[in-house]
Image 1 (tube, rainbow, N blue to C red):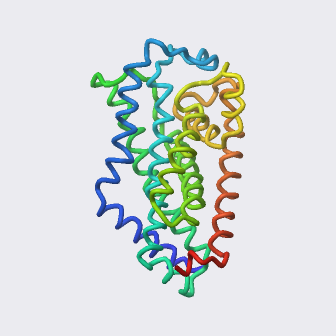
Image 2: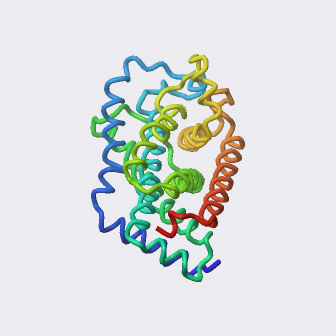
Image 3: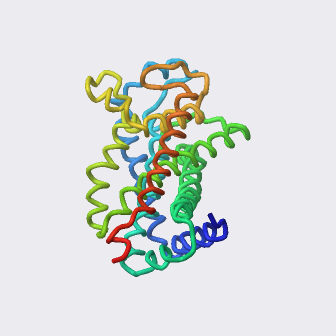
Length: 274
């Protein structure tokens, strides 16, 4: 596997992103609008989950929703990063990479590294500025104590979530020939996946929906991020798994999705030769 090839392909994705400024608006602007508007509209009707009682203050909806918005930014960035696979196939660039003396896994890892870097920059910027927005009247006050160790752990875990969602986006985009089809999958699969991750609502007493939340891999990413942002010593509940469980499930899912993406690329396909 050629590390130079991985870096070259990663650099290409980063340059492409910098030249498409509207992607920043789409990936960051819409989630911030969601955070501000939903926070203002639902703050009076929000009922904090049972584990929030361990906090030294009453949890507001915007405080609860903050990690979910960060996960949404990562999801949008993963979508925009991997949808370029369809464009590369249409333009013939992907076929040129496939016949080059480059490991097929290098193609996957370059997309994952570029998507992870972009998602980390955008979601990290939001997490740093989100509490500041509340100070200027765009949100409820939040008690987020940033320390160097907590920032480092949150950054590493956010990168893991970004790699997971980028690998998922890669698996979806690789066999597709149209961006319209990808957007359809996003509407019926990726967005509902985010909605039932505990990012938007706790879902503690929601019957069958609660079990859907528990088997959703993204649930553990959002829960782990929530622990790192607020208090790692929060009690373990069915709605808020332990940090060990969050890291284990997210890491295992990332590895599985990456291997499946590599397997997809290594398969002979008419689409790859199109």
